[in-house]
Image (cartoon, rainbow, N blue to C red; front, side):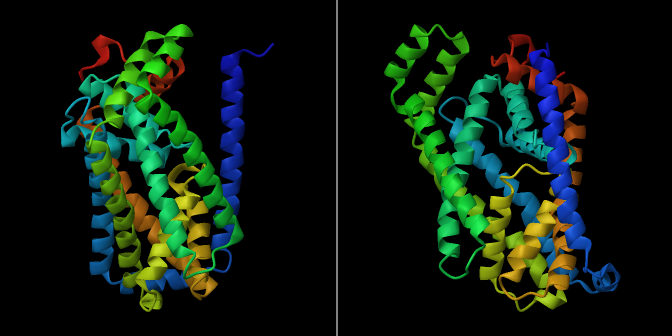
Length: 343
């Protein structure tokens, strides 16, 4: 008989193989007909001023995410901006180098470790962030469909996202706004004590004005993500006639595509989605394919470098932090008191 741990490992490996195969297929399709020899000649002629603007905005956009995270957690505890930023950049680094995007769990684990907040609460706050992101992404998708005909798959993905948001929103809303009833149910079911702390903290978040501030910051967080894409479009001579509206649509499509589990670094699927997005605005396939590698490199490599610096400054070991984060997820309990300080 297969143990539960072995079954989980087997499912993870199968999932990893499937996502990797899909990513490789997308990468092969992007490479086919891209004429990379042309790309080698085009790179020296990029407008590097626009490239620099794109890289800077892509890195700084996560400062908005760090600020929003602070606002969400403000009713529970005041979090230093530095702690929020470095946990997010460390998480982005792990997302880039490992499969199945474990960075979200890792950033919550680290912030809980540094701030003495239960990991269950930081995870719940990250879920609230994703709900806010999803709401604004649906709004952006609705705006996009008014000036461009999106492929059916992305529209269906938008409907799926709406359904997921409704389910998650209802569950989180119950914990936020029906505290007494929820606690009665939880205590009656004799769940673990950490659930009591989680619901109490969610109640504080739900009744705080800072949640509405965080929702507003989420709008800016979504819109600012257009700027790196538009700047890199402007840097490429073949795309300088492409409008910012096209960059907005490409941002929406890429963020919808990010919901799909991908290989480390999002390579392959990210490139394929970029090509599909640009084709909606009449960009020739070879040009779109070559630009997808420029965009992927400018978006991924600098963030990987910043994330690596954050890991080095933090002094965490990749293997240890990943293992500890997964163990706390499996145990589903707050951090022990002796693990709330950084050695």
